[in-house]
Amino acid sequence: MYPYSVESKIKAVDLYQLKDGRFQMIKDGNLSSYMSGCDYILLENKLADYLDSLNISQIEFKNAIVWNRGLNEEYDNYKQLIVRKYLTEENFVTLNLKGLQMYLYGGGHLFVSPQLKELLENSEFDYLLFSAGFSRFA
Image 1 (cartoon, rainbow, N blue to C red):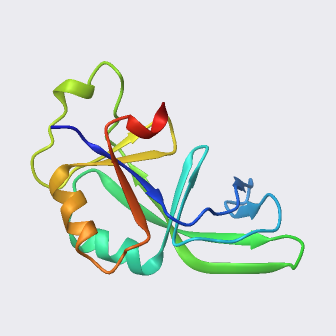
Image 2 (spheres, rainbow, N blue to C red):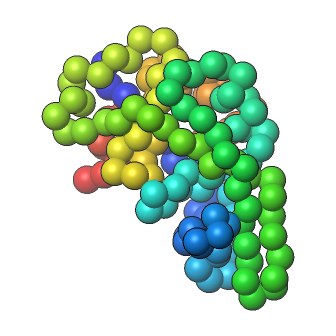
C-alpha cells in the first residue's frame, strides 16, 4: 500500500509568495481550485473547509490572497494548506497510512492516505488527480 500524490487536473499559473504574504501570479494564466508549487499548496475555500471538517492531524490552514499584478486584482477565496508531516525517500515504506493522513514531500507535493484519497474521489472535488506513490515523478 502506497500514499497517493495529489494534483489538479487543471493546469494553473505558477505563483510566487511575496514578503507581505500574498501569492503573486508569475504571468497571466488560469487559477485552479488546487494549486501547488515551490513551498505552497493553495486550496479554494470550499475544499479547505471540507478538509478542515475531517479533523486530519497535523494540518492547518491560513487565509491566502492571490494577486494578479497586471490587473491589480486580488482573489481572497483561497487558503494555504500547511502540512506538518513529511514524506521522504527514507520513510516512504514505513509511513502510517491508516485513516486520514496527509504528508508533504519536497515543499509543494501533497500525498494522502488511501482512505483520504477514496473520500476525495467520491466527493464533489472532481478536479483532483491521484497517482500511486512516485509514479508521476518519473
